Length: 221
Ligand code: SAM
Image (cartoon, rainbow, N blue to C red; front, side):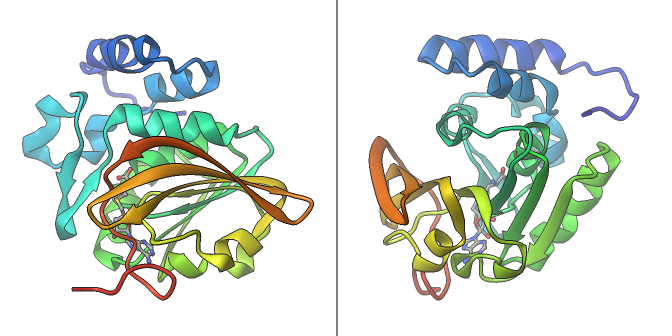
């Protein structure tokens, strides 16, 4: 799906990223690895970062936000166990990079960001790459997106003080959510499952994300 018909000079960098940053660190889900191979990460990076788009680090984007490190993105996607028929919510569109990966894995992707400028930049890139199963939204994603619920999977790409109750409510029975929970300065990645209406949490690795700013997140400023 990804690609705009132009020769892709970044393919070698993408293969190296998958081998040295993902597979070697234990990412095993072949659908996730294939998606990371397919999506041109450099298309989502600012022009002066294009040469470093496949490095083992986050990338700064507009509005003081970041594209997460490839390994962190892959670990979150693997934990979500996304199936081709799934309806997925992403909170924190940012550049649209992870949105594209989700679109490779799921039937339908809704992605929301509080910054209209980021959504306005991501939209044309995702369209140019040919993704047709994505709907972008501007707003406070800490409250979810009730009009598109229930979701089989939710990925929150910003740090929250706790699991936002509206997001848990909008998960389908059996659904999965990955979310960094903690302070604005450091968090643990939590995998939340909805089992018989109850919240089952398993704790994953330590991470550092930009804060989720909103009604069920942190306050701005
Ligand atoms: N997934 C993105 C990518 O691949 O480029 C990176 C996301 S960045 C780490 C976190 C994003 O969360 C930022 O774009 C920020 O504007 C957004 N964000 C923070 N609080 C939010 C909220 N309440 N609702 C929606 N988006 C929010």
